[in-house]
Each structure stands twice: as C-alpha cells, then as structure tokens.
Length: 135
Image (tube, rainbow, N blue to C red; front, top):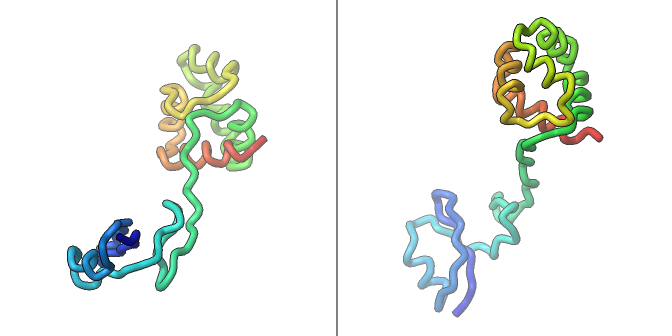
C-alpha cells in the first residue's frame, strides 16, 4: 500500500492509500493526475508543483475602540461617522458610540450606522480587517 495524492480535472484533491498508483487512477476520470502529497491546506497546485497560498484572514468579531477609530480616520470616514452619531435621533445609539470600549461586527447600532452612511457589508468587513492590524 502506498499513500498518494490525486488531482482530478475538476480541481478536487484526494489523498489516498492504494495498492498501486494505477489502481488509484482507474477510479477517476481521464485527465486525473498523480501528484506529490499536498504539504498543507494552504497549498494549491500550480502547473507542476504545490505553491503556498497564505490564508485569508477572517473578519474579526470585534476590535477595540482605538483600533476602530484609527481605521475610520485612515479611511477618511471618522468625521462623517461622528457627524452621523451626533445627528442621530436615538439617544441610546449616541451613548453607545461615546462609551463603547470595543466594537462588535454584529452590533445592530454599528450596522445601522453603516447603512445610514451607505457602507456595504464588505466595506464594514474591510474596516474591521484594517482595524485589527492597528495597535
């Protein structure tokens, strides 16, 4: 028995144990390749070898107040956000903004402000990703 890597034409990678490589290939469609074992889940087959592809960081669930303010400042959005907060008719939202120690991505006040400022979910995710890199 040997451990082998199999890469199908549809891009599916399979790590298998088989008696022979020919026996393993016989189970898959034409164009299937025998390849070296994939070094990690962060490797993709490129041409004739595995290439490392860094993982995409996930959007953090929360960032500190300082991180959020710096990210908004760097994006040029801080004055607009502060103006929207001060003009908001809902006092609880203003209290939350002024006193929050951290900002959670799923917070309904945050998402309401984003909607009012016409920021998409992707825009907010990008701000959270940028904020997470700030000290």
